[in-house]
Image 1 (tube, one colour):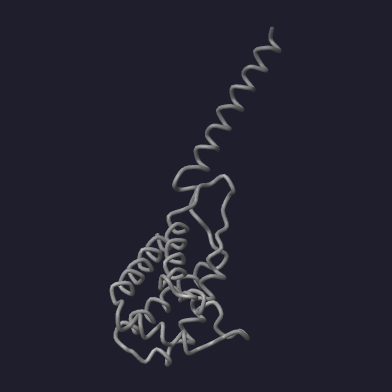
Image 2 (cartoon, rainbow, N blue to C red; image 1 turned 135 degrees about the vertical axis):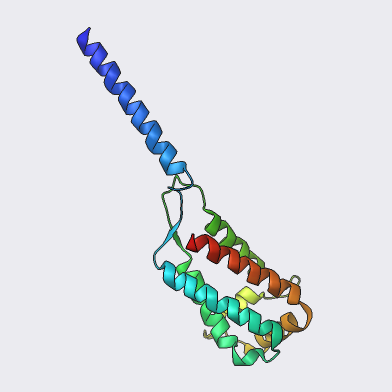
Length: 162
């Protein structure tokens, strides 16, 4: 009888402890995303934001196209989250995914997206003219898209710095 009570007590304690750990792991505080180099990610997001602001006001995209591509590539490299497999995606992850998706699908109906050109910059298959024309098109006809990307980057930075 004593053994049964002890076992029941231990089992109840284990269930309670497991429940608490699960709640903590799934809570907002514990499911925060971590990045290997968050300061680099923040710096590059700030650089990219400033480059997009420059693109809104300057049509000479060639002067900062290399910086734009390098920033994009570093952000992609650094935006790999480190988190528990049972944790749900964080707000930062969702915002980064949304941003990447928007850049990777702009412009619609073209052979290659802006994300494609940004990712291929500096590789053998690199063709700068379509990339530069795409940046000029973005400057000339899509300041609203630039503003939305800048705003999205600001949201990502706010979430990262919380």
